[in-house]
Image 1 (cartoon, rainbow, N blue to C red):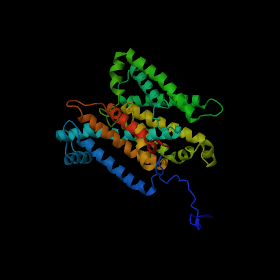
Image 2: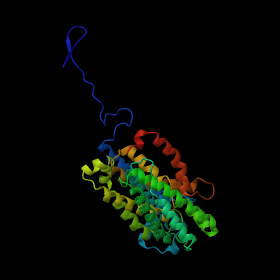
Image 3: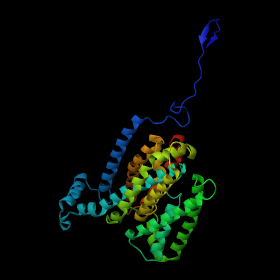
Image 4: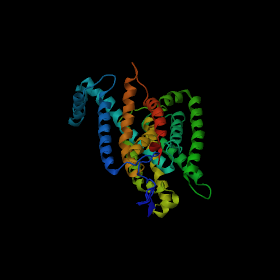
Length: 370
């Protein structure tokens, strides 16, 4: 098509083309290209290795990397613990269990948060939105206050039972009505039941002095004082939850387009939702039993990951598994050294660091889009 020019000639007309989803228009911004994702993945691996090493080195007494290596290789060589230097004992009995706990709990919390945000299509969702943390905390409080349990390894089965029961209640309540289990109904049911059972937990804690003394430390969230033996029970449960969650990545991508579109693409809504709920129950329930309810890890880290990779869950979930434990270990390192004497609980540090960072991320449309 031609148009008449001011001079009387003709010139080709220029048609306006609407910017596409990757055109970089103001708003959400350009989606990350696939070739950027592999370097990001490698950088996340390096970050995780660095924070793991720092977690073994930093504390009340700094320990150099060579001594840390000697302490770790001494375990493999079977050296008699009675002949070990003090630095080796600190690494093997104090910092190694703490670091391993941070690795597994951080990965579980981060993956759990990413799954819930994708499942509910709510970028501000966290592991507490489906009532998982509230159910686990209530069950652990019953175990401590009524049955007299004090060993964290005994909390696991109670926490899993409480998390599962309350998650099932949330799913049943959210499924009532003609439309079935929609994300909005599940979110509302989870918020309501979380408020109710959190009140029950607080009432039980305040009524019993011994329970209050135990729960006031566990309820904040901590990685210290957890023996590696607890991971022999928690490890397989967390691994099963992580594997199940990773297998849901492709169906969650379809669900993000809406239920009708997901069905047309071949996604099975019922099995996918059941699998996500089961994965969330295993991940959140077990991690709460091991380290207590640590906040902001599952809420903030998926925001950062989506900001870098885009909304593709096949990249979001694996990268979250690397970034979340690095973030939790970094927070634990800060907790050890921020006070002149003693240390903070890691749950306090994640809240103090996570809250302002999350506010910045939420204000960026690229970070909060699903």
